[in-house]
Each structure stands twice: as C-alpha cells, then as structure tokens.
Amino acid sequence: MNKIWLIIQREFLNRVMKKSFLITTILVPLIFPAIIGGLIYVAVKEEKSAKPNLVQVLDESKKINFEDTKTFIFQPLNTSLEEAKKTYNLSKDFALLYIPDFDINKPEGMVLYTKENPSIEKVGDLESYIQNKLHDLKLKEYQIDEATLKSLRPRVSLKQFNISDTGEEKSSNSGILYGLGFGLGILIYMFVLIYGIQIMQGVIDEKSSKVVEIIVSSVKPFQLMLGKIIGIASVGLLQFTIWIILITVLSSGTLAYFGLKMPQKQMMEQMTKQMDNNPEVKEAMNQQNSMINEVLGNISEIPIGKIVFVFIFYFLGGYLLYGALFAAVGSAVDSQQEAQQFQFPITLPLLIGYMGLFMFILRDPHGPVSFWLSVIPFTSPVAMVGRIAFGVPDWQLAVSMILLIGGFLLTTWIAGRIYRVGILMTGTKINYKVLAKWFMTKV
Image (cartoon, rainbow, N blue to C red; front, side):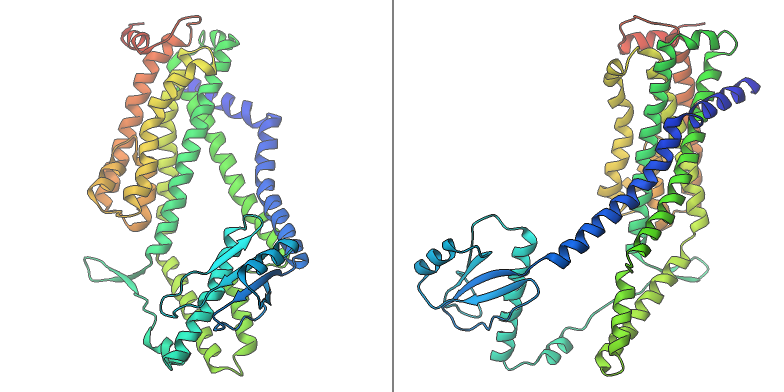
C-alpha cells in the first residue's frame, strides 16, 4: 500500500508541478470570460453602429400599414413589379418586398427579393413583423380587441409536487431537473474520456522512455498501474475544482464589468419604472416575482448535497473503471497511433451512456431503459448522474454503486494482467489475440 501511495504522489506532483498544468489550469478559466467579454464588446459596438435595413415595399393589397422599426426602414413604391425590380437593382438597399392582393384568411404570394442571402434572423424578423400586422388586421375585421383575445387564451402553468410514501409534499420543476441532469451527464462524459486518454498517453510515454523498466524493478506492475490511475484522478479533481471556481468568479466579474444584468432583472427594473402608471405592468411584475420565487423554491428542494456526492462518486468510479482499461491499452502499444484501434471498443459503452442520456434518461428518467443504463457499470457514470436530480430510489442507487465498484475491480484485475506483461513488451504487433494471450499468461 505504501508503494502505491508513493506512485500516487509521483503521478500527482509530476503533473501538478509542470508548467503545462499551471498554464492550462489558469488559461482555460480565463479563456471563457475573455471570449464572453470579447463577444459582448463586439455585440455592443455592432449594435450601436448598426443601421436599420432599408426595405423597398411594393404593396398591391394596400392593406398593410408599414411603420419603421429599429431594424427596418420601409420605403413604399407605387409602380409595377418589373419596374420595382429594376429600381431595386440600381440601389444598395437591403431588400425588395412584394405583397400582392391577398385573402386575409389565406395570405399567399408574398416574395422577398434580395441581392445576397440574408440571415435567418433578419428574414424571421421581417416575417414576424408582417404576421403581427396581419394579426391586427384580423382582429379589426372580426371586431375583436387585443384585451378580449388575450382573455380567451389564458396562460396555464402546472405546479409540480412530489408526494412521498409518508404523504409529505415537495415542490418540483422538470425543466430545472432536465437542465441539471443534462449538464452533469455531459461533464462526466467529457472528464472520464479526457483523463482516461491522459492515463493511456502517460503509460505510452513512460514505456517508450524506458523509465518504467526502472520503476517496476521496485514495485509490481499492478501497483504502478493503480497508483498512476489514482494519481491522475487526483490531478483531474484538483483541476476541475479550480476551473469551476475561477470560471464562476471571472465570468460574473466580466458581466459586471460590462454592466450587464440577467434578463429577469432587467425586465423587473423596467416594470418597476412603469408599474405606478400602468396596472397591467404591475400585474405582470407580480406574476414575474411569483415565478422567480417559485423557481427559487424548487431549487431549494433539490438535494444538492446528495447530488454533489453522487457526482463525485460516479466521476471517480467511472474514471477508475475506464482508466484501468486505458492503462492496459497504453501498456500494450508503443505509440498513440497504435492505440487508435483499441480506443473505440473502450469508449463505445461510454458513448452509449452519453447517447442514452438524451434518448431515454432525460425523456423518461424512471423508465426501464433508463434504469438499466444507470445500473450497468460501463454506462452508469453518465446515466446515473443524469437521473439523480429526478429522484432515484435508494435501492437502485445502492445497486448501481455496488456494481460500479465491482466493475472497477473487475476491469482493474483484467487490465492488470495485461499491464504486467505489456508494460515490458516493445516492438510487438498487437491485436486482440495477443492481448488475450497476455491475459492468460502466468507470471
């Protein structure tokens, strides 16, 4: 055990003390706020300098009253379509909008002429503008005012509560749980894959530099493999923790520097200025406050401590399980190119768990497929952290954890038998038959 601890220390310190670790750990959190800040700066500058797009309008229906907006300036034409096209071609205007005489119940035949392919956003804005105008025309034709129409289509929001076996009720929100499961599942997938490949690359480097021959003279190959896996896992946890803290702090600082606020806060401030003179705005603000309080209440009901514990457990369990397999591959090959053929079979179960997260778990977290994906050790690291926010029975969680530990011990044993032979072999053409032979070899 003491030798394994020494290997762990060596792997941890060897990576943490490198300049590349310090640079990566510090630069990665700086990159995100820098990107956010840069994009915000460019967006603000572009918004200030942006000019409205001039749209020539040939409206043969004479039904729509075009009014200029911040995005578009409308220039009416009173000519034929062919003449309008010629006029437009000679100009530098954004577009020519042709509106024939149409039936308000079935508006067809409208055409937008442009010299270049416009963005989907601009086309969408123009379509929305016309739709709103037609909406107003219909209301006028049927003699329905806007307030009456809104009253006919009230907003429905279902409050969610979970009832326990004892009858206790707890508020819930599927949207929040979906986002939480989505984020945690992707994080597990990314970090298990990234640090698993790091293990494989580390073993290949030591094997090619002959350093391993000196190390195995004093420790068993299995101890070396286990120490390397745990050591790199410690580096991963440290780096991940630093990234989360720095990205959170720096991103918040960047947004504060540019004077940006959350959309909800901006909306509330605008409503506050208007609510004294407008009862409708006051009612809308009260609804907004009610929604925010409801969301905060739902978040407070989420067992954050349990979710963090489960995330760390499955991060370590999944990493150790796959890390052993990556270490075995690294010990068997002499280069990264040779390792390519063995990586896909290893990562395939992890990929199945990742795809299952979107296809089954987030859609039906308590379904049979979701259950089996969260129990099978090779897919449970991604699947279980995706399910945990939705509430998983304790017995299912216990079974999944026990099987994950068993899976780690099994893969470590299998990988150890390959590792002990492969780590000292060089120049051998590797295939699955050779790996099986090494597994069966008695040392």
